[in-house]
Length: 76
Image 1: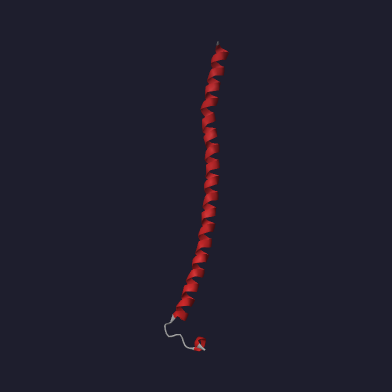
Image 2: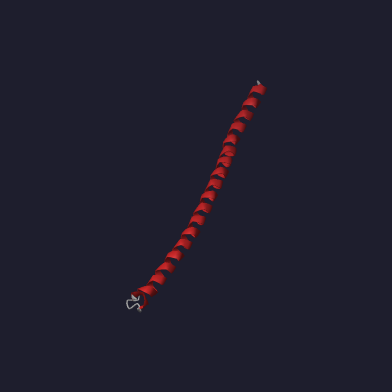
């Protein structure tokens, strides 16, 4: 019987608003998780690229040093 009485404090309307806000928050959380995952993958790709370029950059002085050494030993 008490369930059929009109809600005088307005909680019924607020409960709908609160539930809607919670659902929107869940949707935002899922979106943020997807963005975070994508950012992590992008960072991992950049780390790999940086490692490759570092390897190439480190190999250049070694190659030049070896070339100089071979030239010096060939001249002697």
